[in-house]
Length: 108
Image (cartoon, rainbow, N blue to C red; front, side):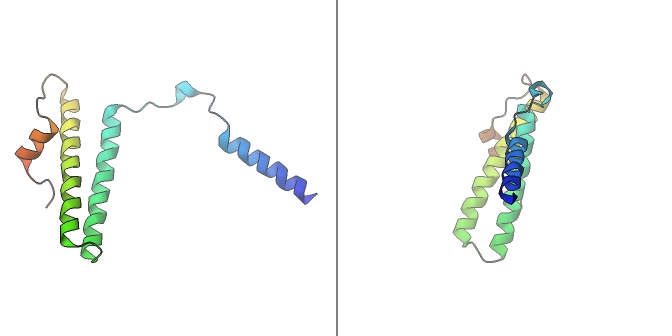
């Protein structure tokens, strides 16, 4: 009896978890700008975690600098793309590489 109850509960659980959404049109579509903003937040969190772990002694100096530089360059590119999308496609001519060179380091 308990085996039958467990099987029905398991079947109900699988149906709940894997049943497809009926209202596909009601699901929100992410724009490129939404994606970039989310990616920016992830990069900021990664930089914050990297700084914390470096101060805790988990990373040597050269690894820390390499990771930080890579994250900062990616963040600069994303910020430049966000800015270009917010201003409109016709007014922005700065690419990610130009933005990095002109602004230098974005985090202290």
